[in-house]
Length: 143
Image (spheres, rainbow, N blue to C red):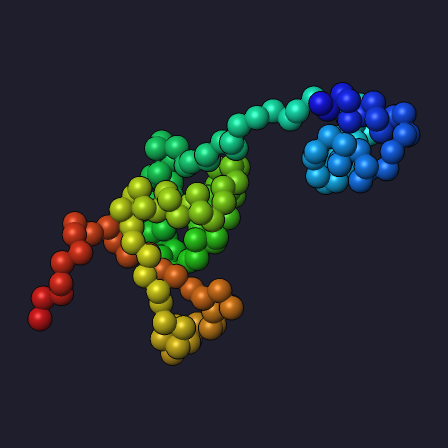
C-alpha cells in the first residue's frame, strides 16, 4: 500500500486528502510517508520494537551508593549528573531512581524551610529530595 500511495503522489493525480480517502488512511499517514520518502529516499517501515530499557549495571551500583552517601540531600537529577561525570555514561532521572530502589534506598522529602533554617539555599520549584538509608521493613517507630 505504501508503494501505491507514493505512486499516486508521484502521478500528481490527487491531493493528499483525496489520496488518503482513496486508500482509507489518514492525511497524516500520507504526510509521514511522503515526508519519509523525501528525507530518506525510502518508504520502508522504520525498525519495529520498543526502545531499550536502560539500567545502571550491577557492577556500577557501588559508585551510585558512594555518590548518594557523599551527598544524601542531592536530587535524583544531581546524582545522575554526578554519575555521568564519574563514569562518562549519561542516565535519565528515572533510571537513576530505579538504581536507588535496587540499592534499597527510599526517597524522603526534605522540608524546604528546615534546609533554609540551617543556612542552605531554599530549593527550586521541583523541591529537594534526600534519600534514607536502606530499611529492613516499614515498621512503626518505637516511642
